[in-house]
Image (cartoon, rainbow, N blue to C red; front, side, top):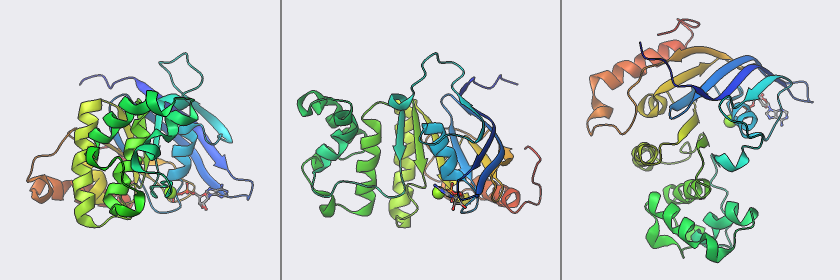
Length: 259
Ligand code: ADP
Ligand code: MG
């Protein structure tokens, strides 16, 4: 057996209790490994978004620790790109200016950001739309802008919170393929939140299955092949089988075991 890659981010003994009294996470342990595509798969309300917010440093755990074992740096915000379910673009700004935003917040002028903006737009296939406004774009294209914006800081870690849930299936399939290609080019680590068995099976090199709230990892499905998929993967028997296996885990029939 190959040694697993070292953890990029480690979540240990995490619990999160909101001031409302809601316990979102309890006994949550997970290592994010450098370079992987890990999906967090679990029912609505189980704490998936909360996990991403804890990793991003946007929230603090009530108990437990979020650490970056290989890093002496204490501030990781510049290393993280966050993509939300809603593209949250500024409607009054064109595509290029929307992508500029994270750099702008770090004091980078529009002119100095120009190359980085162009590069990010090229990565998501939107080079020709720099001057377009969000209202002129389809839902899939808006999500691409949102991804380009997250990439503008060249993050080592991309956190994606159900980014394609609102898209039609055709757009979603295309963005799934584009995302895998993007990751193999950029070699970044991706933590992807979804409640779709099919999407997690298509994208992931590893899947962490979460229990209903309070969320914790009840199963991990490892050793899935990483990277872009062959053309016929979606219709292959191995994909169908994998989806079946994941569904069983999700239904709790074999919760707690490891594959
Ligand atoms: P998921 O993303 O898996 O749907 P969330 O992480 O958004 O779940 O939420 C987990 C639970 O915590 C839910 O019951 C939600 O209502 C609650 N919750 C999330 N954020 C807050 C908050 N800021 N204050 C109070 N409760 C919250
Ligand atoms: Mg959520």
